[in-house]
Amino acid sequence: TAVSQIRIYEVGPRDGLQNEAKFVPTDIKIELINKLAAAGIKDIESASFVSPKWVKQMSDGVEVMKNIPRVPGVNYPVLIPNLKGYEIAKQCNIEEVAIFPAGSEAFSQKNLNCSVEEGLKRFKLVADQAVKDGIRVRGYVSCVVGCPYEGPIHPKGIAKITEQLFEMGCYEVSLGDTIGVGTAGSVKRLMREVLTVAKPEQLALHFHDTYGQALSNLVAGLEFGIKTVDSSISGLGGCPYARGASGNLATEDLVYLLYGLGVNTNVDLVKLIEAGRYISNFLGKPTESKVNRAISDR
Ligand code: HMG
Ligand code: MG
Image (cartoon, rainbow, N blue to C red; front, side, top):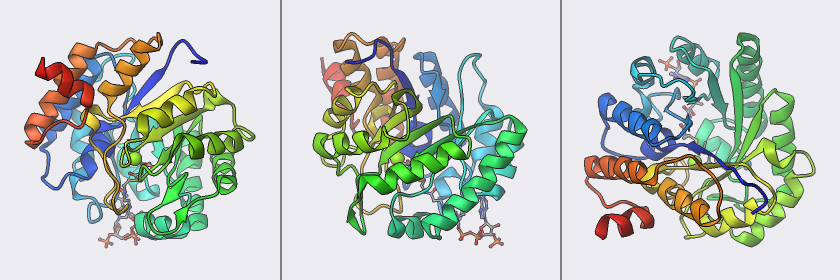
């Protein structure tokens, strides 16, 4: 690949758990976060401060953030939909927030209850405040190649939103294939367009694996010099407002791939496998990580 070191941005405790029907108790969420940190993950998206009426699973964000034993050098960002969520999160000693406009009009309505433009305005209020407060801001764009309601999405619009996120002060923008419909082909077309407004080191890739394309999409993306990859322990994940969306690229599978490519991650795969088993056992379902399954079966 084009780079020798990849930063793994773990989304399991947020994206991974938000779609789980059964409420995961706060202490289990915290223990999962601890295990991920112990495995060497340095960026762990740990909670969201969205409306509890919309996503009940994330309603204990304050308790989670106040009780994580913070490991020095580990970043614990949180997902924020509006100023109200930001104000709540700010009470919890946060250093980084993530904002998440949609790449499609219909998905914006379903996920944020507003238009793309209105969403960008709300997120700008959050970003402005965070910048003033000295809190880092990360941006996501969702539905970057396809929308569950509108179908294929043109890369030009995604590049435009990406540019707006940088103008708001985001240090990085994560391109989200929310419903996992992308292929190496559509990802390459997206990258060529977005790289007209961003440098590769300012971008992250966030793939869901609905159609089994996450790993090959990633390899396609890495060829462009991307240095940050989002993934979720055990392949958990999905969005309650994206019909048919399944789990994220599994962190175990990502680490295994990168090891094979000779890319440094500083992550302990054995400890990562344990973290994956811990949460799958709690949820009472088999892991979605093929690497975890293969290693656990041996
Ligand atoms: P709304 O219902 O239009 O909000 O939802 P509202 O502003 O009209 O407020 C309604 C009520 O909610 C009020 O309370 C507010 O105070 C309260 P009431 O007066 O009725 O008692 N409220 C809040 N309470 C706590 N925290 C808040 C908050 N905001 C309002 N932050 C809203 C609009 C944006 C809030 C809602 O649509 C929402 O929470 N959406 C988030 C949905 C979500 O979490 N989706 C999953 C994350 S996105 C994702 O997974 C994709 C990603 O992974 C990338 C990818 O995969 O591509 C990031
Ligand atoms: Mg996601």
